[in-house]
Image (tube, rainbow, N blue to C red; front, side):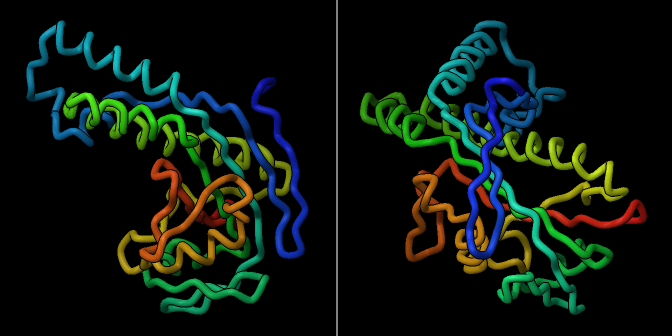
Length: 221
């Protein structure tokens, strides 16, 4: 990962590592799924696929993906509480279930930057609404794939400690892990320092930004 230099930012509560200029490998079929297409059941013409590929490429060029992550100790108090070592508490039955055999958590974020949103707004202003929808879906999928890169990097680091990550990660808004808890992950990751803002509804701006948590435990998780 030569160009994706990993940096470190010290904070009173957390030790954040940063991965810049990411070009994630992503599954294009998942973009089609986001758009409501089933490539196995829907026959797509070659012209249509070429047009989609052009939009995927435009999305990749506009994205300026930065990801970051931090590892923190946790104490799971079932059925629904997860206490972070900084004293903040997350809640959710599914979240506590995911982390029940873990003593640490990986908190991570990724953002696609503002330029991708400028492209989407430009397409909308030009009346190219269908293209804007495709770029929006592609940007969401590619930005989310950056978290796969984070998890792959951390998984390698954990090998020497005899630990592993949970296969799944949860983002606020999933199930009973309500969206208001995004505030806690936002603070832990110092997301504002990466140009990410949060509105009153706890949604992230730029829109192509995501926060998530996964568990770290022994090989039995």
